[in-house]
Amino acid sequence: MAHGRGKQLFREVSKTVTQLKRDIASAERTGNFYTYGEFMEWTLQIMEEFENTLSDSGLDVEFWSERLSEKIGNLQTELETKRLLMSDDEREDEEDWDSDFEDGNETFETILGYDVISEGECGAREGRVRGQILTTLEELAEYLEPIPAGVVRGLVPVEGKDGERVGYSVCAATKSR
Amino acid sequence: MRRDKIEVDKLPIYWQFERAILGNFALTTSNERYMLREFVIEHNGIRDTPSYHFNQLIENVQFPKKLDNISQLAYPYKAIPCRLPHAIYLDIRSAFYTIASVFGLENVHREGRYFYAGVTQPHKLFAESKIMRALLVAGVRQKSTLQEWTHGEIRTRQFPNKNHAPNLSRSIFAFLHSVHSALSKYTVYVHTDGFIIPVWYLQRVSRWLDDRSIPYTIKGDGAAQIFGVGSYRIGEMHTKLYHTGYGQRENIRHEFSQWWLHQWDRCLEIRSKLP
Image (cartoon, rainbow over all chains, first blue to last red; front, side, top):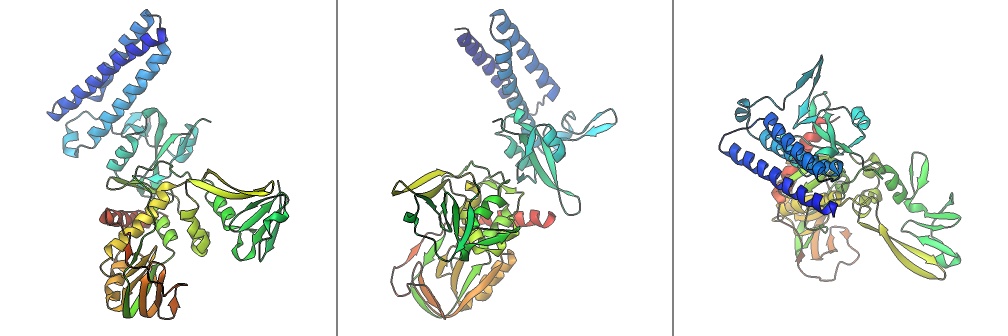
């Protein structure tokens, strides 16, 4: 019975999140861009309210909030991907939310929101390098689209003869047996 | 269980044993493994059947199992019954190996939408052995079958193939279809990777193949007569049946031909950059 109520609440909140995504996409079509930070803030608010409702109703907060964060994660990836496929000119006006960021003295590289990592690091993140070479941003975005955000551990550069980057391979979580 | 490996010219008769597994290249009993000498391949100091080496060489390849396409493809064929005073039989050199090397073993595709090249290239052993090359298509089917002689009867058993690679075999056949589609106005006979053209088209066809870096060899040359699929003669060369008229037949697929040729060019470029 309690599980049924949780499902109902989850359905309602899912609708809200999907609507939020639609609103953002529709606003972006008319040139009104929202930042990644704004989107995060809204989704966190939704999450918080959802968790409070669950807690008040005496439902399994951990179980349902995990499902919601997975859904939100997928939507974030989808939005990021769409944006990265826009032309460079369009992107210049936006907040720098996808480029390299610095943490202390180290610089981490990210593409489409995923860390660029070495093959060794992929193993350390309990991942396995998939055997496909993705050479363009479009290819990467299309490849990553159906994969749940939590599965991707990072992107491993594929280097050519002269050490230049030919493309990337996806580091994905190994299946638990 | 370790079995004694015995190389033989002819496989023993299975009903001599209480239990035996019959393969194309070997017969395995509870204590011995009889292998046909003519098919035995030596690699890394191990002499065994092509299937054994195939399993070893692709053990660590993670083949994508999902196929985002409508169906698998059959090998391309075409036959226009005719007589030609002078024709040439060309074939794409080590076709399955060449195509798999360019596209990569783990390639994933959805026609007209995307093609992701695979990282791994087939081992050199595939280039050296025709049977090994054939396994790049025949050894990656969804189901494996074996024939088992047990309790006085012979049974065929099917089981899932751990090397199932639908994208690999499909990309090989799809590319062959696209080559034959592009050359269809010149060819009178096509079978998998081989085709017959009138000699006056040789220059055009060879230029087309050279431009796309598709390696080929001339296998036959001379007066030709095409009867049907798997039935022709050219110069000194002829098929076992070369007088039976089967008529005109063709299954060359023309859809996505240009798309596949584009993927070929793209993958060649990627390969040229890789070490």
